[in-house]
Image (tube, rainbow, N blue to C red; front, side, top):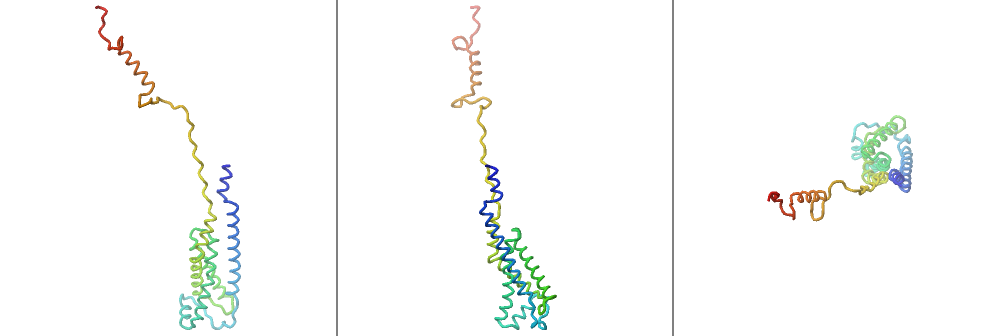
Length: 220
């Protein structure tokens, strides 16, 4: 019985295991689907923009261009689109990465993945160029998704996956046996052995009739 309880405490109930597996599969499939959609959006050639786009290695340069040269709706579409591309990273990655330092791990992974995509865009895709501001906006979107949804969802998942601590076994009471040594009598009287010794000592000191021993009267 104890071994079965320890096994259940270590691995969790079947319902918890099934729920953890379902959440993990859904998060993995969601990340795969998102990766395919991200590749179609970012790695599709754009011949019409081939002579327009240029690489940007200075943070904030494209953002200033959006604010100064784009209309409000066009700027929101460009910047908001890059933010939204990073949100799924902040929702799905915290479930898949270890619980410790998950926000830092998620941020580093998102920035790394988006930087690689931007490098591939600039090197291989027609009409695309590397833009550091896109990486910044994607990472900011991942942080936004983590703060709004990912943190709470990952906390619940990892709390579900945590192994419950085994319940302590009840302490066994020591077997009651004869106690060694003198025991006290009722009402604070001295121990039985002490009472016998005291009685014998008093008998020796007492004379005939229970009085104190008097002088020797053999010569009287």
